[in-house]
Each structure stands twice: as C-alpha cells, then as structure tokens.
Image 1 (cartoon, one colour):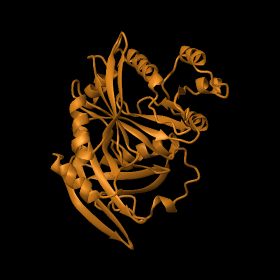
Image 2 (tube, helix red, strand yellow; image 1 turned 90 degrees about the vertical axis):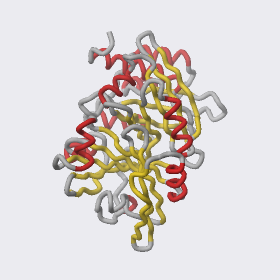
Image 3 (tube, helix red, strand yellow; image 1 turned 180 degrees about the horizontal axis):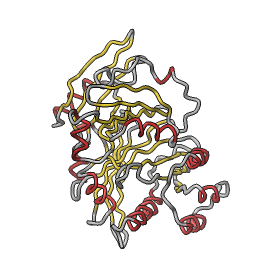
Image 4 (cartoon, one colour; image 1 turned 135 degrees about the vertical axis):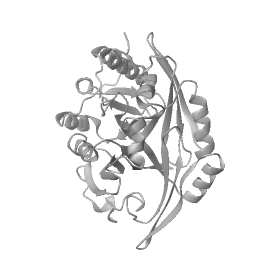
Length: 356
C-alpha cells in the first residue's frame, strides 16, 4: 500500500492551484469544470494533489464546506489488489462510497473504488496496471496523460512521506483499531507529549505491504493544539501531509524565497542540539537559518531525519505541510523533535490567544 493522491476541497480551486505552483513549487498538470465543481490538478514527483471548489450550492464540495473549513477530504491509497483490499475493508465495516470500477485505457487498466474513512475522511483505493491516467474518469475527465510524460526536472518534492489524522479525545485507540482491522495497518511508534500547557498522544501506523506511514493524534487537554484543530475543523481530519525531498536545505531556501511561511523555532533548540549531538559534518547555522529540526538515530544505520513545518495554509489553524528529508534511510518520526514541534505550535496558539 502506497499513497496515490490527495484530494482537497477549497473555496477557490484556481487560487489554491496558483498557491501550490507559485509558492510550494508544484507543477500544473490539468484542470476541468464539471456541473458542480472546478477541479485543478498539480503534482511534484509522485505527489498528486486534486483541488476542488464548488461552482454552486449543490454537489459534494459545497456540502462539505458548509460544515468544514478547506482541507483534505480524500487520502487515496494505491494497492496491489484493489478487489481484495476493498472486499476486506467492507467486510470489516468500512462504508463503501463507490463500487469497484475498471477502466481500460489503451493497453493499460485502472481499477478503483472508494470507502469512508474516519470522520469525514474518504479513502480512494487505486490499482494500476501499466501507465494509466492519473485519475479515474469518474472523478475528473482528464486527458490520459501520465506524470511520466510531463517534465519533472523542476520538482522540489518526490513523494508523500506520511499523512497525519487528528481524532477526538479518547478516540485514538478506536481509530487505530479501525485502520488496523479495515486496511491491515500495524503500530510502529507511540508518543505521549505533555507540556505544562497542553498535550497529545500519537500512534504511528505503517502498512506491512508498502510505504504508507499514518500517524493518528488525539488531544489530552482541552486547549491542546489537536483540540483546536478539531474545534475549527468541526471534527476529525487530516492535520498535515509530509512532503519528502532529497535536499531540504535547498528546497526550503527556494520555498522561503517564494514566500512560504514556516513555524518559528527558538535558538535554544539549536543550542541544546549542538550539546546533545556530536555531528561535525552538520551545517548547524544553515539548519537554524531555515528553521529545520534534526533528529539523529542511534542504531547501526545512524539515520538522520530533517524536518520543518509550514504555518497553516488556509485561514483557519487547521491543515499544514511538513517538509522532510530522510538521510541514511532514517525510519523514525523525529522523536527528539516532537516536543520542539509541539512547543512551536503552542507559540502559534499563544499568538491566536488560545494559550496564555
């Protein structure tokens, strides 16, 4: 199981597409207009984002935005056997939203279906045999071009590293159990982060047959940043998507020139890290300049994880992006950085008057 694409519901798809291309460095792929929605598609490497906005008061996008702010509505998974995955999901209690559909495209085949995920989240399941179109024609009547036929030399990102789901208080275990039963996820890590102001619990799920990493968070206090997300989002939803890059320093440097806003990390974080880690080859000043967090694994592989986080990309303090680079096949999730990230987000909450 791997990530296939991300579908956003927003108020203005064309404006959002311009932000993705001008600020985040994605490339434009295609667009179309249906009866009820405007659809724009952008990509970077293997990351495909479908951006939908309503053209009237009817249709799924308009109905979604009546109850929720803009954000991710569909985190799609590419699987090796969509029939088996869909059958298992429904058998384990997932609600089917679209039946199995097979599309023949020249000599290639696209098979897909869709189920309801946790809360208002959906999961499209996709199986590709050959070079199929990016999306099912039922979702968007795009031309049959594939990303492999599009210029990719300017890409800043190569793949989705992970996606993070926020759920309600005391719902973490139920959500974890659901994704384990429905899709066969397994627990990889567990975090319990507490400060003197707030806290969260997080369980990281991975899939044994693919690269999908899927952390799930719950709040442990009423003023937690997770609870703030839930309040503004009107329920559970995708908090952030991590975009993988092969050179985070160059990527972040370019993104900042293009106007991307990142979370502020205090100098004390870097002072403490220098004392804790003896890594002479690390460019500490560059990490601090670009607000990049670093985690160093102590196993035989000595992996290095570098990560930074955008501020929320929509007006509400809900969805944001993470930018991540894994060196030496680092497998962690920034265990040492979790508290630093949490405190950085608390400082943003203080600016909004949520925390005193």
